[in-house]
Image (tube, rainbow, N blue to C red; front, side, top):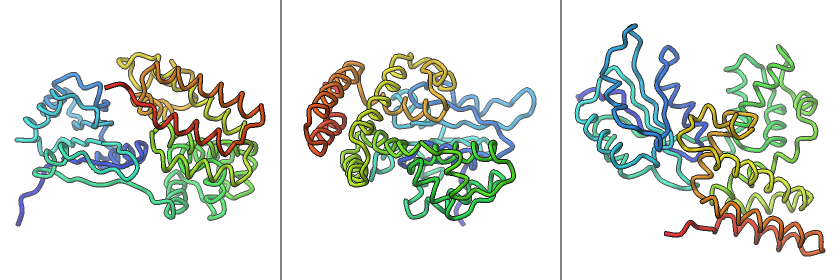
Length: 316
């Protein structure tokens, strides 16, 4: 029989929200983990796992965005994993690009003593995920309600989860149906553009083009699409201006965002760009707006803009 592995996990996947939710489930509802981002690693984090709490509370460490861990952090993890604390969960979350793989260096560290899991919800499984999520929050959702949420708000799990919370608050005890979704979110069809922006600023060219093609073929106003991209860029510029040392919990307030999950996602996106690149993209959006209003073809102007967003690279 193989020896029991310590509670050490590497979770990887494309969606940071799903990764964090899975991590919290692994830690357990009775434990409040210390949570840090990989880029904010200061040193000594693993020592906290081995230090008994003054109040006897269970110890746990949750590290998000582990692809940004600095080299000293990797060295500290390697030393800790040579003899991990058996009853103190350590969960590392690595967000990867579409069709990406788990970071090889982290896999090599974790596999001998822990578990490596991919976390994802396939598109075909998203309605079922919405139904299960609603049930977990004490809401009864109809299949047409789940489909309406996805059709209205897009495929972002964090946005869908937030929408369920809004429905629970606005319509306590009522079943989530298509009509209920329409009543709460009427006029928010432009949020389909969220998916395009997430993919474009996530530097996913193939996904961005699929999303843009779907919007154009669905008859969405090109200027509204452009306006959505401009709005996202303005948010990213504000997030980029917030110093990295500012805790994630304060980023949303500092950048004027409505939800904490937006701050988490946007901070991940802006790390792919320099401030100069973001400012340069603002100029490209102005040019695209001028071109569309002058009669240029939207199926030329918008793909060129999306390609510019995805293709701009920080100088090496």
